[in-house]
Amino acid sequence: MLAVSILILPLLFFFGAVFSQNLSDEEFKVTKVFDGDTFEAASSANKIRVRLAGIDAPETAKAQIPAQPYSRKSKEYLEKALLNKTVRIKGYGTDQYNRQLAEVFVSGRNISLELLESGLAEVYHGKLPEALDAQAYRQAETNARNSRKGLWSLGDSYVSPKTWRKLHNF
Image (cartoon, rainbow, N blue to C red; front, side, top):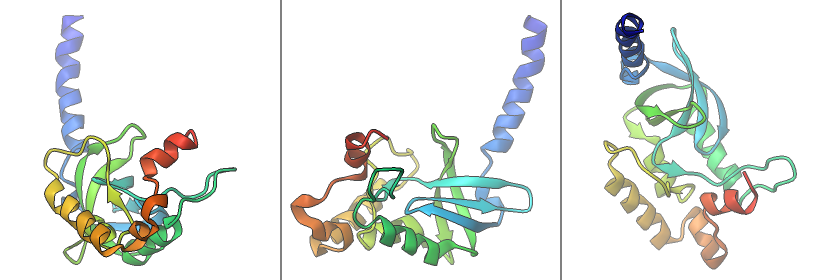
């Protein structure tokens, strides 16, 4: 048993290191946008599903559950910014759905910050990656909220995506 462990541990370390490599070393082309914070991208060697780290966009319709206000605009913004474009991805590991948590950059622009500044997403209400500049994200959200942009124009009727998911059991 010890001999097997000695052989397996280096392999796990190697494959873990390969999987968690800095994705910014590769060029990815965005092939599909699912909603305002999730998309699919491909490089010459990898195809990955990406969840934008640090933000939460309004939920799209699912089965009998209606779409959350601004979900369509959020998705459209992400499509316009990313679809069929080459992006740089700064990975922060994977989430419980095996999506790569990442910041995504197009021509040096942080797309998550743009969504927050436009009022088309909010800062994620959960554990954020330690290396993520949460202060910049919170400031972008505060600016959009103070300007009543996008989802912040809903005032008291606004429901966060996290609360929306809980209310609709998904």
